[in-house]
Length: 193
Image (tube, rainbow, N blue to C red; front, side, top):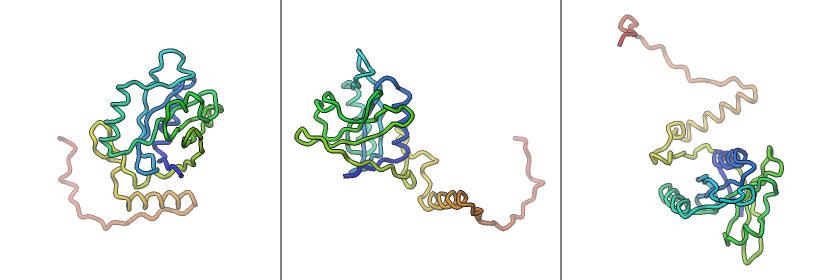
């Protein structure tokens, strides 16, 4: 299986892992099929040494359930970081009996790695992760439940903008639609309200 994750969700996970360093960080992943569309970062609730363990509370699990339900996402798994290590499941990770483990390795803090693992019958199998473009994906504000304005443009406009950016990078001057002049009587314009 190949897990896909949007650029935005990937960035959320990486920023959280780097900003919480040297402590472990994590959260809940939701999506549809094998595409990660929702990340719910959660503060580490471990009381002892947060550099070695990431923990959730019952309230975190309840909040995650509401987050996933509200956004029509399926639970994919918990993600967490290994601040000083490689993104390989530890015996402690395997003790939680999750089907999928998502681990951020920060052995090289400035080049973190996100890995996915499938656990079956006590055996661990690596799964691929592919970062996909956010174009055409609507971002929903978790407070209001409504699409964010900048993310609610029709896909045709987002595709056109992406093409213009690609052309500009390639050295092609962008072509803008030219509108006919509008006859407007400027004498009626006033800056006074």
